[in-house]
Image (cartoon, rainbow, N blue to C red; front, side):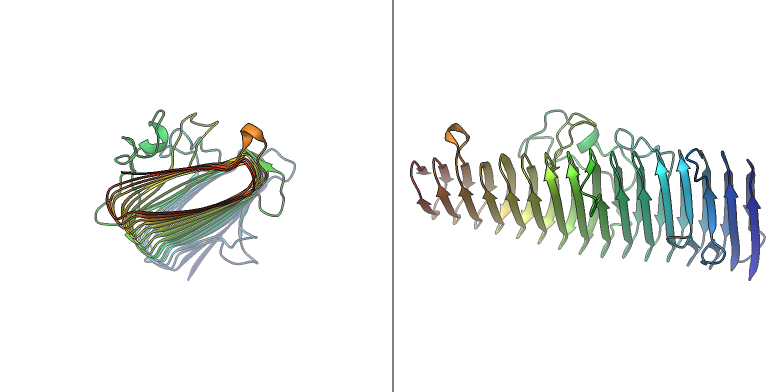
Length: 432
């Protein structure tokens, strides 16, 4: 074991390279003040940077300025950076740029203050000022940011990687990608006026390497949960080409946006949004363009919960035996999604004033929907269900007043069941 300790209270640049050693090296770092710059390179296995509670790495300016930079490059297996809660940057405009090349990497970091990790990641994902990149398998990343106007960019390539990112404050941005390589993620950057079911919706996708499709990855993003005061946050999670990946997104506040992209089989995504004017699958205010949730493959599942009003969910599943389930509590919410393939299932539940549009293309598909709550005149609940193919079935229930329902089925051996209770309801069923 070789240990190196750095301590600084003034502006300082640190460069440490362990190229002469086989591994098992340790760096402890303590800096306080403004414009600190730490540049650490370690080659080999079992190297550490500030991974103990008694000897962490710290770049700290509690008075609120800062502008500190941490650059770490580790090449090898089972390398570790930080210990969450003690490894930290504080102040404003701090950046952590971390690369781990090898398997079993571990990064844990805390940033406290404002404008940290300021990456400009919405319009250019691959040129951030700060972020974490792991290439290998069994990688682990845990990042916490406390403050406003913070963002972070994470990329992992390989199998069985895990990311947990928690952000508390407002105007937060998070991008997490597993087994997605390069490209500009054109389905968010460059797709003007896209709509479900229309090109380039079906063809747009991030680039991903065929040699690292990625399986059994997990992503968890938490923005503003427990504070309830966050606003204008953005979370984008992508898992490319592999199987049995999972992601869970939690957002609490107003004008939150979540975007989901998964390709492969047996993947699952779950989104929870609390507050109002939130959306799953629509980017608005950053790129001024629309991007749906994407799930491409077989046996995938997307579950969405939205609590509040004026919330939106929109997106696309393409493949076989996929399931989408959306629940919206509150008024003036909308759901608009498409399933293209066979043996897919769509579940949609809405409370109070809302509207829904569900489209299924293919055979042996099933759609189940429920709308309940009062309708205010022209603001009544309404739903449009379209199925194109054979052996499809639709079941829809509406309760309340002044609700409307349109069901269109094209093909053979289709079935539609409608139940409406209350006054002023209308139903139109068309089968061709």
